[in-house]
Length: 221
Image (cartoon, rainbow, N blue to C red; front, side, top):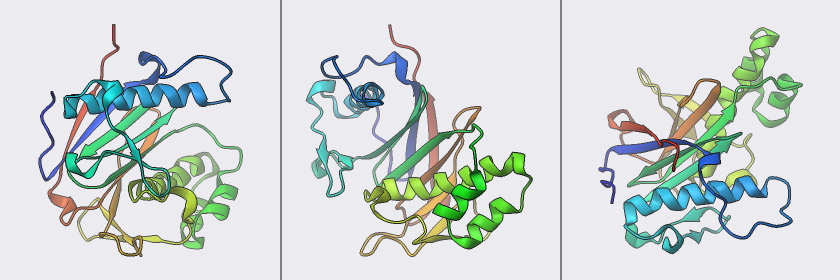
């Protein structure tokens, strides 16, 4: 069983989805479903390291908006994201959210920014050369998604309903306003692999004091 993360530690894990056989029966899957089943296989395998349970016995539950959770008695929070064949997971003793996006050209990144981001955020994307607009958009978008995934509401809440407030001398930014009746959330960019952009969100009182411990999961036999 893996060492549980401390109260000021976020464990980050990256892996290839193709290394994890899909959970459940093969058959007439909807588009994207096999990859979703591989990501669940990775998640169950990873959580088994912390719970000491067999992957198929890890008691995953669903929050109000569909976010997968462990029962509160485990005292563990986690988040998972995947893009292409890469996936990344965060595990901590407090709520976390993570997002990962392949840094690939989008057809109209400025149009996406104007549709999904606040006007001042879209202006940041508009201010860079066209060839840099996809990355500029994803830098902001991954932070938005990491928070929405972390608080469990996902895109049921508009990404235009909050902004980020800078924290002096810190890579972390405060979500403003946070989800009603929830802890204060902070976010930061976190790129886990070449060719990908990502972000991490945490509900922690002192994010600047956190230690981020990264681990690459090798291919499985």
